[in-house]
Length: 97
Image 1 (cartoon, one colour):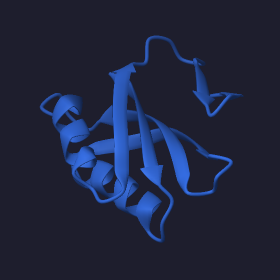
Image 2: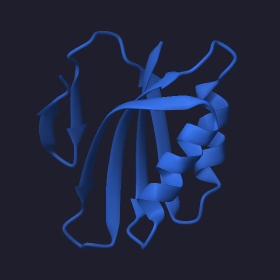
Image 3: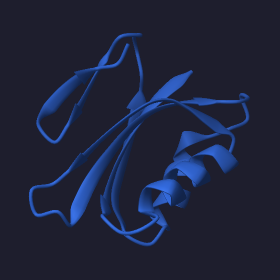
């Protein structure tokens, strides 16, 4: 099942690669990704649609692990109900095709 994960983080060198790397190493594949930086330039938002490689993977545990990374401020997730759903990142809408 596809899940949507939303991460608010402090913009820093290597921050995005740490988050994506953790997701991949924990047995999830990134199907879609959208990013936005806040106007202050110090915070960003990452919206991902992820798919578990097998049924034994739990997005709740992944969210806890992501929350332990330095600079991660907030994590939320929800089931991606329908293909072609919209991501909304920092006031912008981008269609996930």
